Image (cartoon, rainbow, N blue to C red):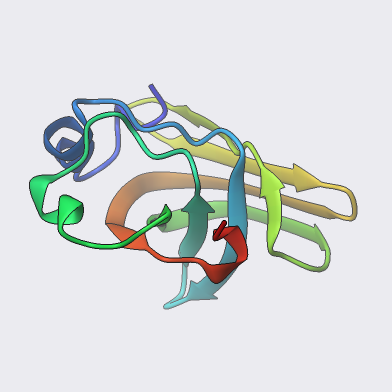
Length: 130
């Protein structure tokens, strides 16, 4: 799985029964800061079958996930414009994680020593209301 070597991968195990797809997510934004940290923000309409009990009490139609890459050794960005649907390619070993995000007119590739699953929260997006 894409999160096998991530810090706080236990969030996915306990919140979603070890299943959380990153297919067809919306790439919302990114932030590069603090010498070599990259924060990636995604929004997904692919709600897992198993969700936390506290989420059941909230109105939501998607969830936000924030990944933080620490000790980035390679960062390539070409093009412009975010807020597009994609399926990020996340390949991970104990030593490093490679993340690639591609879309027409945009390319991001990152090689990092550590990937952290920083946050996963329910969200209500008015664009997806029926």
